[in-house]
Amino acid sequence: MPVIYDDVSFFENGTAWLRLKGKWGMIDKKGNVIVPFIYDNVGRVSDKLKAACLNGKCGLFGNIKKPLSPVIYDHIGYETNMYGMGNLTGYR
Image (cartoon, rainbow, N blue to C red):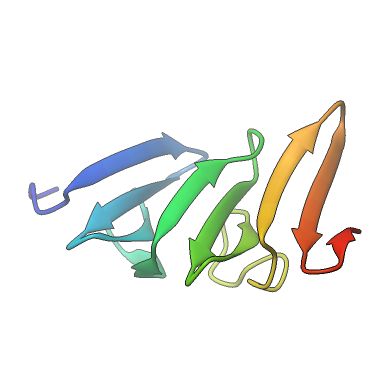
């Protein structure tokens, strides 16, 4: 894989989140783009779930092209075997 990325967050389950020109996206092990490089931040929620944020709103991602949740939450966290998604009206 050519060294064109600014940063690598994690590589697991056959995919990796990388930063390119200041934006995060996901590739597979062959270097194919799975999630476009449009996200401002990305974080690990669990072994199989990642949170990606765009314009201050976050959504959950697995190892697929589409988010598992809408990218509408103020934050996403994990506590004691529960996922929490916060929006403008609080947790749900």
